Image (tube, rainbow, N blue to C red; front, side):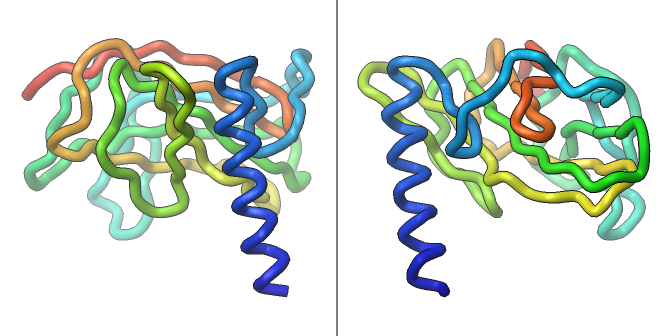
Length: 165
């Protein structure tokens, strides 16, 4: 089982890398343009004073690249129209290549200057979900974009600016 999962992950990353040059395929599968009905997405800052929980704080179009404690936690919140299970993933496009990624994120490289970061597809058993992100000290400043997918469909694309502390 582990072998097949590893092979699948390698194939998925290769497909993502190829797809970036000719059109994006998030989470290793084709995406329908029409978004699922009723899902609400908020992007902005998250509160980091709740232990392992990161409740949504406020929407933001400008984020400060703050890496010293307390570091800025940002991300997105998905609110479904019902309590049914759903899957999500996202595609993050910085203005310049990032040097490192952590957790479940992967770099997606293509020929030329484009470099992006993508998450794997994950399933939420139902209800509201928040995904936290942090900046590294060498993450690029400037215009970023995040595209959030639910059940394989684009639900929201957000352009935001990262500025120095």
